[in-house]
Image (tube, rainbow, N blue to C red; front, side, top):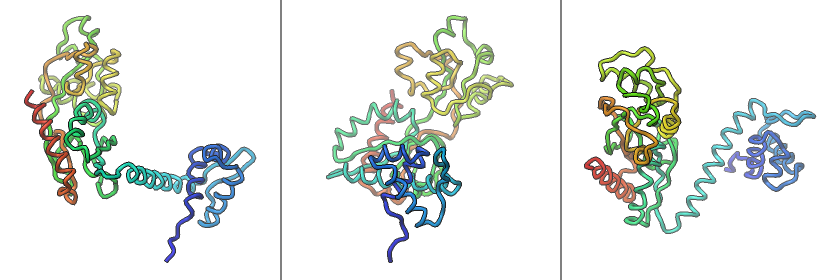
Length: 298
């Protein structure tokens, strides 16, 4: 049975026009004429029997149906492009699509990944940032490194390391006098989006209750927190292993050697049960856990 699918050319033209909100810009991007774009999108609308754009003298605007369809088409075209590039680039090799929490990936994993490549040149590791859990069945990922508990349905959890959050700041703040918990409570507190209660937990460990412990600029990534702290925007709670370079060069300093109390959360490698027997993933898991053990022993 013939699939009820529009032509790829029509979908590509539509995605470009929807992204630019312009037939002219889509034509320039795809090296086509504007009339060719019009024909492709007109044919797509006839195929769907749905109006995707409203035309006016001032240009085109997506309809509600066009907005919804463009998001889905863009995601599917991205997936086809990604799979095509993966196939083109994996001649004679095996690849691992790894989701990773961003700062951990850039500051801890990437500096070590060359060692894995030397040991396993037949395996290519692709990294994509993800800050929160997801359903593996809905993605192209083979595994994930994330921070949290070990409860992730349908996966095997492999412990890597705990996270010890310490208050860090610009050395300029230290020049203004001794830093203690009472003074930190008076300074701007930089908040981490995925750890909204970190400062509350930290102050509680110092036997303090601070009314403004959840007040302050809220940033998603540790790398953002580090930059904000460097520029004297406030004090941040960051694991030292993610800011080794900044600590060594002196652009950040540990304000107090007092960490957020340990909890049941840590960094884990999560592998879907259906992929647990993959030779490439086993090799990566064993290498990664070895690197994590060596780091914890330092």
